[in-house]
Length: 224
Image (cartoon, rainbow, N blue to C red; front, side):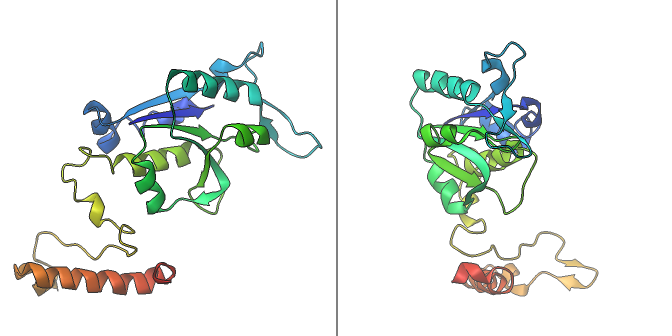
């Protein structure tokens, strides 16, 4: 998979992609992540990428030309499955979206800034609009990092145990059950006996019951 991220602040994305799972995924050749500075595509003498809104109002808007030129250059080099715009008014990101996107070959992720991008970019280029929650961030970079992480960890060969991602919260519409490790007892708090029994069928039944109970308590909307 290849992921191209378009941003005004490429430095914000250096750390998320240079450590842990995302770093190993790139080193193993499971994914290529390329970050593009939109300012590099500006034809303005001062590399301006924003302008005032038509109709007035507070806040600047990202202009068409540098974004369009960057996307067109990338699309001239390869086919893209999706051009994703990170925006507060997009569809709230769900695990099912990540599952679908993990099957793609090439993705473009556009990070908004200021009051967002000129609507014509959304009309002409964007195929999917995603939000990571009902709140506003200073830009789309953190959202792009979240989306990238959620997708990449699903790719074959990324996790040491490829079945791990399949048992995460939301994969089966439920929250994950409680998990325990050594020691068996800590300050009087013991690991549930069923987990020490070695009876795999009963353990799976217990985990399912715990998942259902936790989902009822914390995310009853998932059961609807």
